[in-house]
Length: 321
Image: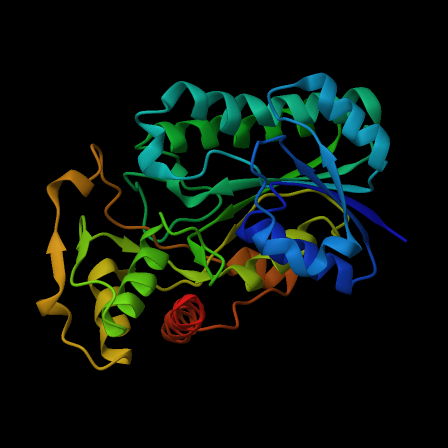
């Protein structure tokens, strides 16, 4: 039985990855920071099938102990301060958790069990003010937020440990991926939850920032399969994981409101306070390498993803009522 350690297991990606690895027969461990009010909502249904280990990406000794306790064959680093908007007021913490934290866990692996296969969750935000369309593995980075800068750091230290120590380390440059488990602070879930509330009479308006920003949105459940596939290859390489399609926030809003039979123009309020200090206007990934080498492809369409998220939010809200 293979063993895997997942950092950030309580998040969207961590929960889907844990489910996927369990289906593959893995013994799954999850690294969780000690908090006063732990949130296991995304993994409540599999808590009896996994083992939670306390640890912190900012504490090297705790990471060494976590690796010794779990003795994993694979480590998936999905933990980060991952909300872009918060990375400006929390720039230093973001740099530590999202950037330096990667170095800590790589060093823990090197010192404890260097033959572990390591996956780093890189981000399309690293491309920022894009220098090429579409973006692929060789496209230069131009990060536009403290979060993106920190992700670039994590990405390159992963490359550096691969080249310096011969470790099996790779990064998945994942474009935006969503699901009903996405946090409410992210624009897709903010829209689907807001639309559900407006439809049920629980909210009168939805405040958003830049409606013209374009993203390559996919389904998180599809993307975790690519993470696993990367670690099953003979040699470690980095891959762009994307749908190859881009949609604006405006399109997202139109699809969501149309699905519940409402005119979005009557409810959307553009709020200047929700505009980024430095915007990323267009992200569009080229997943050709992943498709050719990994045999991976996205299965859920953008429109069906948004409808599924609205259905889920409607059910949750009705249950609370």
